[in-house]
Length: 633
Image (cartoon, rainbow, N blue to C red; front, side, top):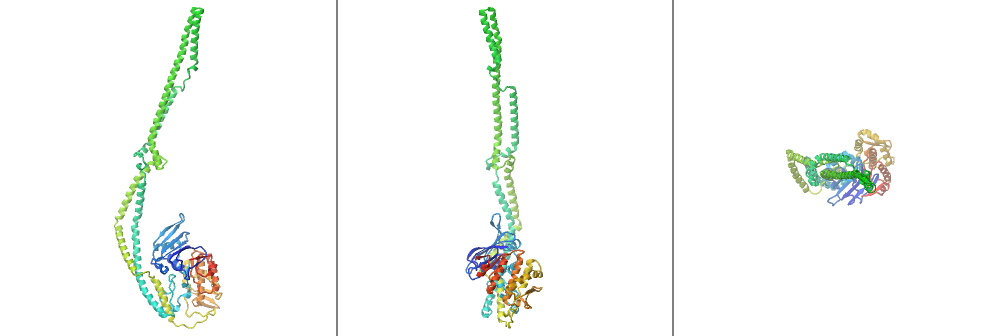
């Protein structure tokens, strides 16, 4: 998991409006003013929203509205974006890799939390707050001492799990009258917060019931969408009228095979008659001048006629009868001429028959084309390749009409169900109740802090007053010569080791063995080797070994205890990053530490940046020089 971008508008500690891109490694975020940007608290408010409007505490003073968005890459490799109106609603979006567009996942607060835990890989809020977020208020030296807590126990404000969302500070114990006045103001605020909390609890319950009712009513939404889609498909379905086709187009499709068979049969008969005629009549008639028999008969007749006339006049009159032989000769020539005429007549008749054949063929094809033309038009209009596909396409409108009627009948049956009718009535009642409760909440005034936050501040103030009034015994020197604290500070080890065991899904003893050596390396480097060892008991309480002594860490000087806590936190983050990477968020927790140690801490954070994303909010220039990049927020 890695943060990719933070976008803000009217968020305290940040620029009035802006989008700040984040990358991997060790990044330093520079706030615009001396006030520390509440990156950790804002991240918790966005990722673990409770829907009660507690995130309105991050509004810039004087601003009426504000927005904040966090873009991050989940353990599933998908980019997500949480967007919230401070004090209002929120949404979760997911980036579609195919379209590169953000898609809404849900706008329900509880569903957002469940999705982030189950799909994105976000740990529980306590784990994220106690392991991956480090704020100045979490340092052991900033927590109430044991003696004060014992003098006035308050289980609701023990300080074991300090809240990062609180911006208030403990009143100074020296000014007891002012602290008591603030205590009374907090008690009055607690009464108002309790009333608002009860109202909000009712609102949440009604909202949940409205959601369940809406889900029940939404059972018909899918059916209504299906009806709308079916009606749209029905209107868009083709018909003969819409395509400009004959009304009997489907009948034409059905009889088209018979039309094809009739055409083929007629053409076959025509070809048969044409072949028969071609066998009877020669294909062509030779010219008469090429007929040798005709010329032979004609020549013989002329010859005999000339001989008969010539011989009868000049030689012997009896020879003139030779001329009679021209009769059979001319007869042969005439016969050949008549035969030629007969063949010409037959050839002429064949030509006329060929014309008739062609006319018959054209008529057959024209009749077929008259039947096929509308079908081809239908193919083109419907975009189909085969004639058989026309009928299903034209029948689709009737099928869709039947589907629409069927779906409407189902919808009518569902809407007539008594449970559905009662859900509609109940939804109206819930809406009226919600409006009344929201009006009552509005009458309570502007934003009211969360009751748990007020209780925590009230408990810290009571402990501070009790600590100021308690007698203080003389201090004993610590291992480095500095005076040790009068009362022991709280040992942060049990809580942190318990969270680590949840992360590593193992018992506390195994976690101790896993962390011991690395934690000692960090501690010896940070404390200039004043401590030679670390031990934990079965409950997770820590002991530091120094000069042959076994000292509970709660009795260490405050600055050494803070360094031990820092060493343990960095160790847990380093080991956990080997399994699952989550960003490590630090606000300006090193203010007041020795300047000489800050470069060493910066190098340690830079090393962590090679394992996971480290986001450090600070204006100190030394950290910026050691970082992998800086972002002005």
